[in-house]
Amino acid sequence: MKKIIETSKAPAPIGPYSQAVLTGQTLYVSGQIAVNPENGHVVMSDIKEETKQVMENLGAILQAADMNFSNLVKCTIFLADMNDFAEMNEVYSSYFKSDFPARETVQVSCLPKNMKVEISGIAFKG
Image 1 (cartoon, rainbow, N blue to C red):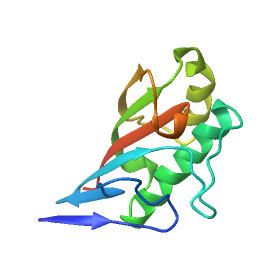
Image 2 (image 1 turned 45 degrees about the vertical axis):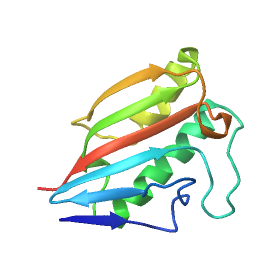
Image 3 (image 1 turned 90 degrees about the horizontal axis):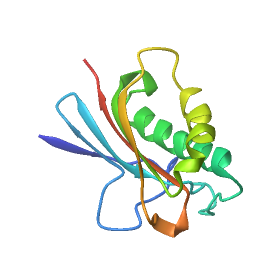
Image 4 (image 1 turned 30 degrees about the vertical axis):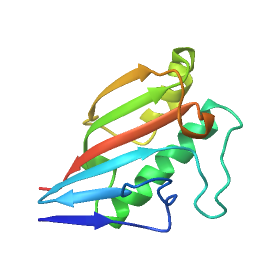
């Protein structure tokens, strides 16, 4: 059985998808971009600020499913420019204490709303 996870503390989907889907103990979180859910504005000041907003959005969805960053087992990071990797990674890593999730980071030619970073995740509660 699957359960759709929704929260107003993360941006509403901009297409035909859910913020996250919970099936059993596994949560699949859709890719998050740097949209401030309070006002709908895109955060595009720099890669660090974008990454921070993305992680806050991801965290809000995890919280809506009664989980947190320690439940993440896998993340996929999409960067518009791999030269932003170090600064993105600095912010990303600040959201974890230990037991980092598995992940890959790939450079893509374009992201929604011309963002610099998008992150999706899979979390497990067990």
